[in-house]
Image (cartoon, rainbow, N blue to C red; front, side):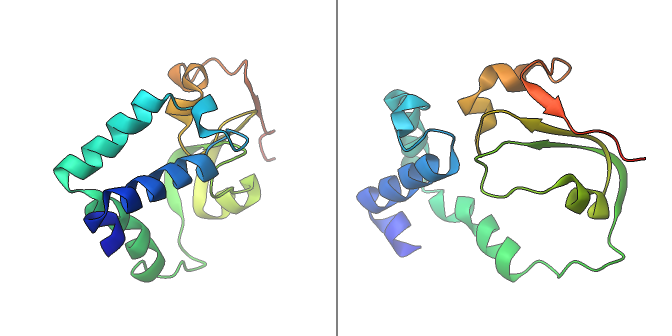
Length: 138
């Protein structure tokens, strides 16, 4: 954590590595993210000194979140979108154990940053020409 806050090179390396690993770029981060977009993002974190608070949620989710119980279930109607190169993929069956899944869509391309990686696929949620929906459960 200290390397991220105290070293510009450490922070930049960590962020760009995550963009590379968490996106659908086949190892070439610049094929998805133009350098000026990456630099803008890096500068926001560095100048505002917010890298620590931005990664705190990952620690808290891993260490402080209560364990899920079998009785935990979100009743609100839920839509789930899955991108194949995201850092975590939830099969519909798993999502349906915890949420009232009304729509489950698996996109053909994309990763953890879908609005940046594939903006056309995230702009109009009612147009699923680039996605396939899993059949509804009976």
